[in-house]
Length: 218
Image (cartoon, rainbow, N blue to C red):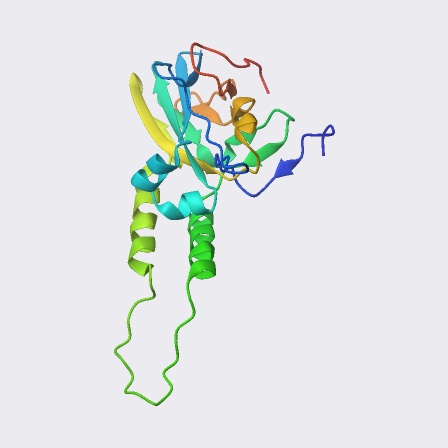
């Protein structure tokens, strides 16, 4: 399975460094991590502030340690390119790889957390008329969460020439802030739509500032 330390983790990439209750944030005024090559620029920006995750998505993501990562693709080529989000991975400082979570994975994790924290019903001591059936507590919120996730996910995306597309991928990772500071985002599947050319992969260090990363052929 490759060299020691490159264990493939299927739990998803949750950029939630809650292990010690820490958050890592980009220094004020700094640009998100990015890399440019072959007339394509990709920017990655983890949303590591709990309040921002609760506001833009749902509190259940913070409870389950799931972190959204905003991926922005700028295509300056003369042909559309295709990006497949399922293949995007997080690589930590120890070279452990994490696959990103699908929307279904995020919903299942959030629902499991809601069930675990829901208090059991209190049974009346004497028979009473059955009340009208109601949706389970939190059901409406989960529906809202699904709509939010599907509207914001990166998914499989076509980026037209001279344009920009963006969307989120989701990771679940154990560890503290240091895990994120030494991590990289690996984006292997980009292809020119007209020529069918498979483009160079992107491996972007999560360091704010200019172009940093690895430019190699697979």
